[in-house]
Length: 194
Image (cartoon, rainbow, N blue to C red; front, side, top):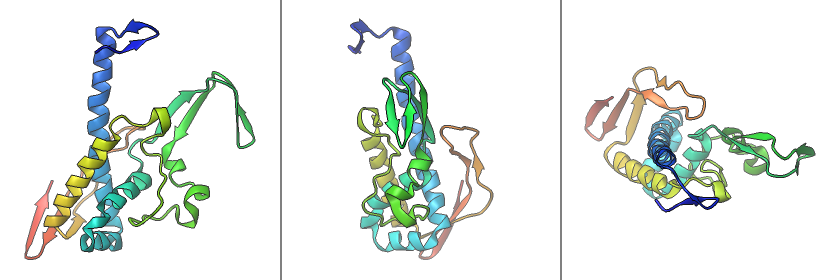
């Protein structure tokens, strides 16, 4: 409420816009991390089995989900000065689009397994939450919410499978899931969840 930009307080509209951003960003990205992380586990049943057998890997698995699915696809920034990057010059004032999915699959960083989903990956220097002064404000909360979800989910269900088509949201920045029908299985019971 007391924030200032260049010595001026935020207007009511600016404050409301900021709060809206926090609410939407914190909800959509975490929801899609959980949904798309579940899809990654379904598509890689051997990784799901490892996670069910060793729930202590859940925090590492969440970091791999963040890397592998990149809940936010891109951000745009403007160069504040001329910068040389990999033999190219980015001029002051030029827009630069940061493609998180591409960065999170960079073979120079992740090696020959950059395209593989590996819940035991260490180290995992993904950029799903951005970095430095542009790091996501809610990264700790997102990690906590995902950890609690997968701890509770995997404690109850050791099997999950898709029972229909996954309907995606129409978004270029936050490619989420609109509808996903799954069948869940535990020792002696089966449940279908929407």
